[in-house]
Image (cartoon, rainbow, N blue to C red; front, side, top):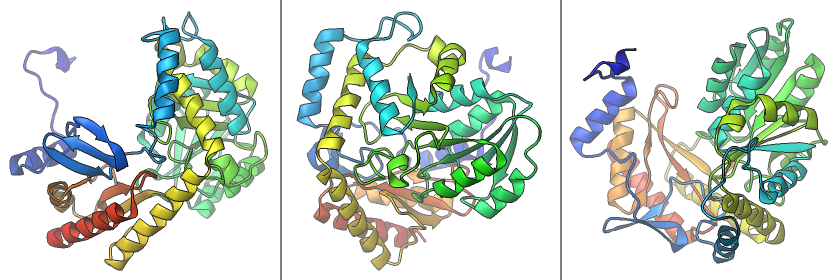
Length: 398
């Protein structure tokens, strides 16, 4: 109740102290105001034109003209927003069609949309699991997964990052209740890929459910960009719960969970974020459908993204930078110390490359980093320049 006392301020956290120090030095760039998105993966911030290397528009579709026309048509048809929650009066034909398409894409029976990816994870885990159950979670899973586990009250067992031997040993003590194995598909801070085939094998052997968060894999993994199920050619229903977002490769907002018809029906009547949050606006659902059409129609976009990612990674490694085990456009450039990472990010900004610092405790102590992401609308010269700027900034600050 202290938050109601006039003048109350919460005790400073480690990260808030870092932010205060960065502000004092004039090198704080989180929440930086973008005035305009520009072609080629650039943005305008005041009088600066910066190459956006911190965003998630993997396929470069934010300014795509054809998709904007679809959005305009849906806007004319449905207006500014939904009338209310999905369960009440906010379900349109576009929502239903998007759910159908996403279910097909993930080789699932059905799909349920949420207002955001964060809500999709929290609401799903909270609704399906109880303190009687055990959830096995990768050490580097996204915060929304951890918050969902906490909200459910389930017992949590953390296994080493992508360490299947550790997970197997811990599954032997799964307890009497339901068990869930949950993992990112592409890890958001490291860019590496989960061992999904082994996760499927372990969940089958130990009688657990498997949930995969593919926020960073839709539009990135698979021959056509269909995500983790295509990338690993999984059998229909092999992954019990496939969670994803409509705010990265697909530009906009929203999240989804694909699963069996029984699970999605349960979530529609027990998932708090679905029941009590307003539906995503219909023109946003139409944008997502148009993006899925484009991904299917133009596989060359994914090929371009992969080629540009390889080019950028090669350039960074030539500079001797540590980019970990990334196998995707997510590119961690490890600096180590959090203060120095803020300084390196500032140097990048001042030389035309938009990057922000990722400090502890967002990542482990001693692993603070610049996290760069490649998008399909970046050109090779711009990526080479970005690699040079990043290398100079990191070397100047370490």
